[in-house]
Image (cartoon, rainbow, N blue to C red; front, side, top):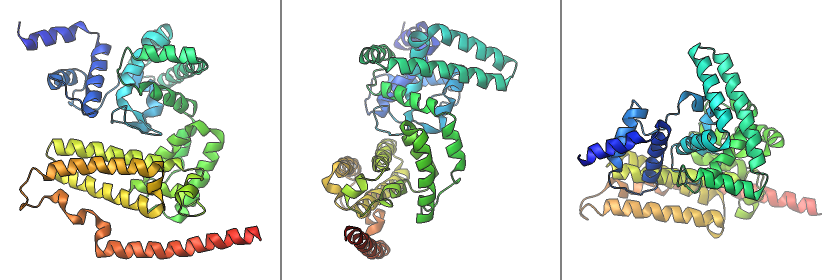
Length: 387
């Protein structure tokens, strides 16, 4: 028996759910930059079974898909270890579902799967949604009880660890709990948002801040997910930071950190890290034009954060920003070094840093002039308040 036959025999010994879980785990390791011998062959075989289009994006089976439906707009395809405030890794859904079915609520999960498959068979969509909602409520209650004590939390964490080596997968369980609790409020909030926000100007910032204030009052734990829905509408992801800088007394990092929506800076940095991972994948597959566009967006985000938050380099945000930019610089340097010195590389072009152009410098001067007026007015208001 050759190696391929032994591999096929091993995979067939696993349950379909275990094979699906294995595929998610191998993809997670790949996204983390961990190369495993033979992984490509195994992934190829498993994708042929579970994803007819060969996609690297996990496709849930019908019962689990209906259960996880409230999470859909908040799912990302990055590695679970990657920080993503307000978002959940799609690759954790398979192990979480297996954990729910085998450990958390095995009997109820079995009844749910039968009930929902019966309704799917007769095409009763209304009843399908009702069955899914009922099971979601049961899971929420059990999770609330689980998180009520340290011992039960750690026991559940250990059980989930049997299905994935990801150290952060259990954090996604807690996120799932918050989203399911707000499963009615989040879609309503989402419907009120503009279809697309090309420019996050002052008027829209004020309007959306008012909507967020109302949402936060009723569902404080789900606020990061509401912010993630806002971020989905933005053409330029770094503009999310305006929810914090607009409300701040000044541009100083300490004043921005004191605003109710300071967490958006972390979220912008999360998205910068998304681009770092995407850049690494693009370079690995020699997709230079994609890498160029990613790098230009990365530089724009770095510049916007430094311009809009004074003293950012001296706080936690700045430390993380510098770490990300150092890692990105290492990727770019490794790529550029593959070519002779007399051969220019598109990733080494200064044009990618648009703020270094004449237009960029004029924009910077305009921003600084506006900031002087804004900060002066803020100082005057503070002086009036003290007198």
